[in-house]
Picture 1 (cartoon, rainbow, N blue to C red):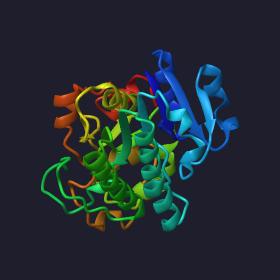
Picture 2 (picture 1 turned 60 degrees about the vertical axis):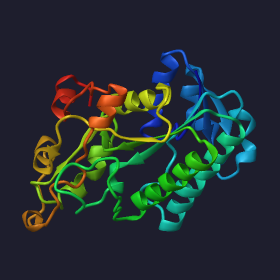
Picture 3 (picture 1 turned 135 degrees about the vertical axis):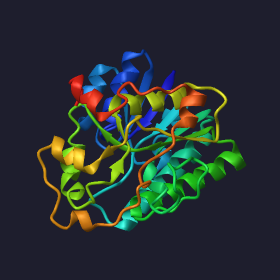
Length: 280
């Protein structure tokens, strides 16, 4: 299949694209700076230099594409307005360009943070109301709504995949967030997924027919506690962490739909299986 990927320089994209190339797919990458994806280009990816918000610069590159996988997003280190422009306006501009180019499928990477805390006394399900608590998931929730409207009104072949905390394959993500974890109540649990399983979920969403308009949670089978994560990385909770209130179901999701409809099964069902396999 011919696949158009954004966010190839990010944590998820830089690990997904080699897997797509290894499976024989033709991959085009939309990037701001082609020098940053030279290694992927050498592996066989075609690079298109451009800006999401200027679709006239990449519209022709979308011709004959079978699926767009939209991973590019702003998360940390930028102001709220920049986050909204990148994550909402960028997604909509790309989706409209995909419609103009008659691309049949559009995979959008979202986050389980869109559910927010305090929603239910059970794991979050795809049909639940969204209560995002800060700028990044708020922008993702609004982008989801805009893309779903394009699906209903103009036939965008949309598939939404909501990520948990992503780790593995020398990704520094855990080290980056340990200072935050140390402030959380040690009893709090979070759902995670290894990069191999994120790539698996994205490919299932991209290649499975007949699922336009569907939303899928992805995660492993065993949420891990903050206490375990800190202990495994030789870190200690802050003195006041035990007094921190928390929602025991925040960041815990129901994965029944992706298992039932797409036959997703985690390659690494828990952080411990990934650690024992040397896949961190």
